[in-house]
Image (tube, rainbow, N blue to C red):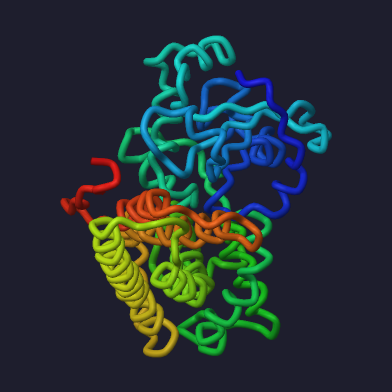
Length: 373
């Protein structure tokens, strides 16, 4: 394990987005007394199962921790004192150089241990949002308890008003036996976001004709699409601004003609991929909007029920696309924050290629970077 210290864990817990932080310490504190947490852990290692796992933008002095170039890594943070996070923690990066030795010495895990496979899955994800995370783990035969797939406190606070406005049409409508009382907008929003519908939501379950287990799954999927729609809403202005900055960024130093032409083509291609990705995400979100309109406006509960059943199949691609867009905004704002040195042409091309790779669709490939040839 590295001997460097993290000093801002308490701030991280309160401010980090869902896509960036998987707070297993909070999951343990909130659900450690439950049978599900004990019998279906994310990690067999008790230390890992109480860690904070973070998508981290690499600094210049961290790049040589890996074979090959990358701009984001997955960091495992072990708090020094679980009761006093201000004490900081120790960390390592998943798949950094010497990682097999680190997990052996730090956690007693061999390279073929299931926990190492789980860490590898997390490292391959563009974000740690719970809906993408669950689907990717499922594909790899890993099915931890539902308590591991929650939205962060920071995002929940920001999402509440958005979700209330989204579900207002349903609250304003009486569908069969489903009657909502005054103040039900906040109540229903809270039930959806908490992931624990409870007895008061029985009328909705009956209306949707879902068995209790299917209903819990349906509420999770409903929350997923509300989360993704909120993310798209918050990203729209930012991704547009970043696209403009990408188009106009002037690297420092002299630029060879070949690199200048390549940079111009790369900017244009990346901008096109960003626009296409945003449009594909909007089209997917419209599937949800249409299904919800069928329930809340036309009273077609079966349409929304069928959508909830099919929703998980959409999470992987949707999560990957929004994760890639979030990465572009987050890394660009970090690297080119006010006061930071401009990039030379080689670094700028490298950053743009990283963004483009994140946006690639299935079967697509990226061109060769002449700066690396």
